[in-house]
Amino acid sequence: MAVELVELVKAFARPGAPEVRVVNGVNLSVRDGELVTLLGPSGCGKTTTLRMVAGFEEPTSGTIRIHGQDVTRVPPYRRHVPMVFQSYALFPHLTVRQNARFGLEMQGLSAKDADARIDALAKAMHLDGLLERGTHELSGGQQQRVALLRALVTEPKVLLFDEPLSNLDAQMRLSVRAEIRAMQQRLGFTSLYVTHDQAEAMAISDRVVVMEGGKVAQVGSPADLYCRPASRFVASFLGEANFVPATVTRAEGGKVMVDCAFGALELSGEAGAKTAQLVVRPEHLLLGESGTSARVLSCTFFGAEARCEVELSGLTLALQLPAPDPDALPKAGDAVRVKVRTERVHPLY
Ligand SMILES: Nc1ncnc2c1ncn2[C@@H]1O[C@H](COP(=O)(O)OP(=O)(O)OP(=O)(O)O)[C@@H](O)[C@H]1O
Ligand SMILES: [Mg+2]
Image (cartoon, rainbow, N blue to C red):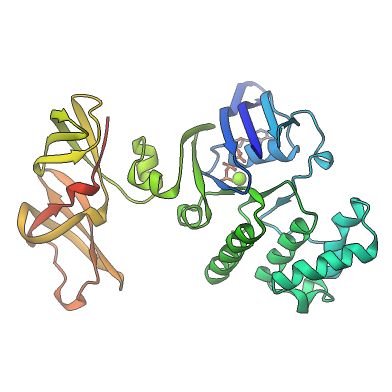
């Protein structure tokens, strides 16, 4: 296992206030070559967790192992787990090559060996034309790729990322994100990656750890978390979700029969309780000739899709219309019929 966090706790004392556990019993294993993302709202403890793995913050209790070795009390410079930040933290008065050499000199590599390694990696990252430039002569996206080069060239055991794309514009964010994922898969390095952007987490990760209030809410592949969220928090943090209350009438052989605003539905899954909340995504609802009666509250055109809000049996539901005709959109007040794609609906107990 590349990284293991066992019952990790970080408490901060504040004068005149009780101690707060900002990381509260986190357990996590990251396999070799995996990219695992910590995802969660502001203040849920993502950066603090990452800083403990890097060694910048000492855990209050718990254990951190890197490739089987207990590093809980090992100083950062002996862990060999560099971190790429939101601010690129490059040396502004040095060239790209000099920046990249820095960590290698610390490792005791000769200038010749260091340059050979830098040249090879810079070529792979399409940065070879920029090696002799000063870092102040680069765009934000280029600077972030140089920061990645500088970290990767030291051949780290594990690479940590804390919101590395937040300073980039929307387009640059997509291209650097794709580059990080491509490099990670090509070179096979292990990564722990922090973001609060769900689309970024879904695009880049093998597995996502959703955090809430210093704890792990759920761990899984992006598809697992989206299709089978374990709680309302996870369902609404990853994508948009409608919650439809339901009564379970029967359950057998991996099928659950429920009664809800859409009438009787047969869902896949196991029964957990007599009542459930159904997670119904906007794209699981369809307008058509048949279905449950509803009234349109609003409808907005976004090009590739339109989003409607409808009122159905006292519930306000968000609904997605794929490839809409902008001249034939439903209007507020229209009576419509709504069908639910039951095969995609997930019950929460
Ligand atoms: N040195 C510190 N002393 C006291 N409290 C701290 C310290 N560092 C962080 N905190 C608190 O711990 C909590 C978690 O902070 P952390 O930086 O880990 O959050 P985060 O999930 O990275 O959030 P964001 O998405 O905003 O970066 C916050 O409430 C923060 O105020
Ligand atoms: Mg943070």
